[in-house]
Length: 187
Ligand code: HEC
Image (cartoon, rainbow, N blue to C red; front, top):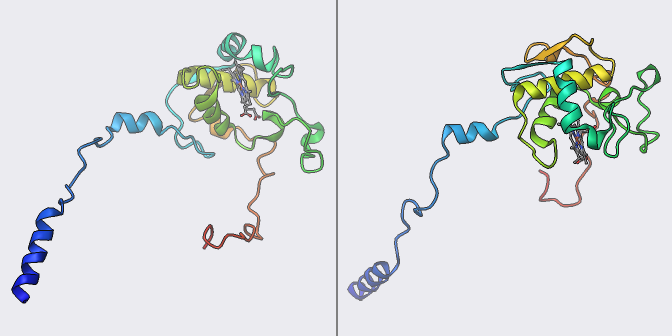
């Protein structure tokens, strides 16, 4: 009886295909491929690439590639307004959610403006701008927002030093996150 069961198991095992170590599709990503996607720039400037750009250089690129959607001076649209400060650098957005949020009034970090433009703008060709061009664009937009002088040059060292008016408007909520109704979505 034991021999029969053993035979049956052996027969079953012979029929069951062994899972191969790999499925034979795909390959490990190459370092160059990973670095092409690994482009995030953190608020403290970690991740900023080499390169530099002046306000005047950004002005030329802005006119050619951005003004059609954001307006000649960044205020006219038709798309998002990029330029403008609140009187006294107030922060009325909680009371008035319709109020336009600009780089000068709402963005807490200059570094993440770089990150955003690099990955998302212009929307018809995201990723097409060189690092130096993006530094120039950020410099020009910071200049239009009265945050840096006309002769400023932005690079991985100078950009993180620009203190934005909304820098301290975003704080961790000490109450923690809302309680979820779905017990599986949160521990
Ligand atoms: C074809 C139109 C178009 C062009 C060209 C364009 N943008 Fe935009 N941009 C948009 C739209 C639409 C949004 C809003 C996207 C969203 O909210 O998801 C936006 C958002 C932005 C924002 C974020 C605004 C905010 O405060 O939320 C920045 C910064 C920006 N664009 C910069 C640029 C720069 C710099 C260029 C030129 C290199 C550029 N854009 C070219 C349409 C455009």
